[in-house]
Length: 229
Length: 229
DNA sequence: CGGTGGATTGACGGTTGTCAACTTGCGTGG
DNA sequence: CCACGCAAGTTGACAACCGTCAATCCACCG
Image (cartoon, rainbow over all chains, first blue to last red; front, side, top):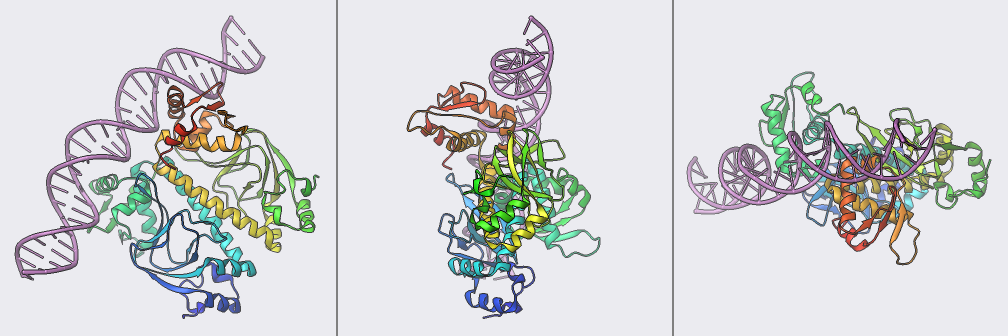
């Protein structure tokens, strides 16, 4: 197994604060795992059996309600933590948006280890606090933003992370999500998402060279579409 | 100052896991504080300066956006924890819905104390994890539920906590929130909230003996209005 | 008894969801 | 290499829901 010291997310995952010898111990508990696009790692409603770190790829936290509609509660990316420690059931599924690699632990083994290693627990606490802040910011968006604002916010959000950040040229990037994924995330329908993208294209704010690609021609105009958020 | 051993939320706040002698030490750091209805304890955007526990009353976490609309992100009640430890800025204000009593600590003193007392940090972690689950559940509601469903869910939610829980008789309780507060919480307008309550009354599912009072006549029917959630 | 603020009701319009048709892109197999 | 088929995305028509604005009602208080 790969040593934690070689880990792709060595400096950013919650393990980063552990001293070398504890890291080796944790390493023996972990297991690297591939999750193919569309596969679920955790199921909504199941007892929480595993936790872990994302090494590569992107996954969504999602719930599906009785009426058949899905809602994505958040997206997790490399160095993010997955799962619900300390013996609760998982309120949501974790599903791969793209082929992903994760480093997983059995929940019970992780719980025990965390209790014995305060730096890890502290790292998890800080991360959970920022996750909570982020979730609440997202709530604000779902509650109060129009469809146009949501799409603009989302595009800028992705642009910040995925663009090949050259100095000024127009930002270009590939969406890691399908229209359906975007709709589930933004609390809209695919038709509404599609219409908003068309509108941005017609207004000359973006272009869409291919299905999944976006070019931002006028970032200021796009930011104006977010409704000062 | 009141000793923590006499505290109203002794068994439920995050301090409950501390041994007696640590509790005394924490006690010396804390300060009991009254917050009048409408007063803010923490301001959105400010550096996080204080944290604490709710002893009595009800407060809301709220953000106001540039366009002047407020959104309530959650409600905190006795034994809940308030504030953002570990040196971040507060993303939201904390405002009293009713006259409240809180037990506050300076954030920096609390941070230091928590680092030295693992049981407290662990309690805070568990609470933050459940807060995160709750926030995500609320997101689902804001994203996908209709106005009627939101009001029904809210009423049942409050009923569970505030009713004088006699065996079967119709549930009766006082709302701790104004219509505006409810609208801010549910991501609606006061008019829409009002109309939904009128509809429930016309359908014989509830009665409203006074402005703030609600009687649930037909709990099954009300649950049917939530859209299986 | 009037005033004030919260709550209700009504009329109306805009935004978004729904349903359906259509187009586009892409991979597969002949 | 082309043709086909399928899934993803786009577009249009329409309706429902909810927000907006305005008028009114009601409880509470001086």
